[in-house]
Image (cartoon, rainbow over all chains, first blue to last red):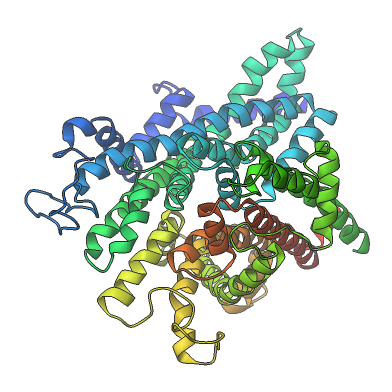
Length: 302
Length: 318
């Protein structure tokens, strides 16, 4: 039997390469090992964690009340009377508003992606596993939403529904469902045709068991990695919506909204006005690089 | 070839139909009675009845859709609530201004991105590769509206070299691109818009070029004694199809991104029209603009697919 011979040859090769004393690492152990030896990803992950912590502990960290206005203290430069990062157009402390703003911006970056991952992933697995007309119906519907550039679709839905945080998040969720569904569908279709699924079915496993033990394990990786790369996109899109007046409503601090209202004041304190955008940029690039690092560590190809 | 083109065009028709359904539905996901979006809030009951009948809101929704589609196909997109002008006029005027930006931004973006990616992919692992890869990540993560604001701060607030916003000096009649006083209004919006796709195009090109260089045929070309330049020409040509596919998508992002960039620069294009429509709750304009932009995107992707199949005949058989 040529198959067994090839397998034996490969096993021999593996034995030769690995020193006999070393224990074989499991998948997650090797992912952790690779991450630990990737200092850049670790550094960017630290920044992400710091940003998240700063947003969570904003009430403790903020030196001022983010809503406290001051008529005399409007649009002041860095360091004016204890306002480390200056004040905005209503005299509110920029540092405090940036800290609190991170809460809304991060929530709008993460929640839509998670929701879309659940819905899109489920639809994709169903489409890929059932196949036939169910697949056609689901995937062709997704194609229609794919025909819109993402910003345009988000603006269209949020714009028609009249803005606000909830509508903004709903719009973003709808934007992210089609790409995640497509990734899940591709992965499921590939797995479904493999021999071990056939073997499981032949040995009497039911559909639920096959999906639970054989499909999910192979589909979750790509879907998760793709979703993690969407967090940065979601943060950018969410602040874009707020920038257009379609996201968070004033006076709630949000990076996109702050950038939009401070835009009128670039002639007075340009550097203060650029801060919210810098926060968006730094957060987005760190999420992006962490996602790239995770993709490499988990060895997911798409 | 003809068969492939026909099949691809036939495939685009249901997509275009679906897009029009989504755009039609926009009026109905708007909060409250869809009628409220087309009549002023102080309208009398009589006016409401007249409008209801005129717009066909008293008919079942599928019938309304067919009527609406008929209007759209004949170029009737309804009337703007804010200006009382036909939406088609508003959209086409704005689209002309956006096209002017895209005319410069698209070639700049594609050429820059492709060159960056090609150089990086030709020297994998070298400092130039790392530089380009780093720049590409920055480009992908940059909020372009913020980039626009920063560019305004640097070039219009701190240095007064270029105008901050608008299209031509105030009071000027028409836009004459050959006049420097007009043309300088283009520079900042074009640069900002062009930055949107550069990162992704550079990344895709780099990956495609690096993969091509590992193919056997490259080895063969070298063995035949071709110069590195000649080999690079073969590699770049073969790396083109995946890059083209991404360019089509990126063109859409550029169109979408114009919403934010045009808002920052108050450039009177389709994106600015859209953001005005949002502020005024002008749903007919919102619907008409989105339908037009989405249809352009569908058409561009169709053209890109056909171009790809011309460059790489293997796609036709797939």
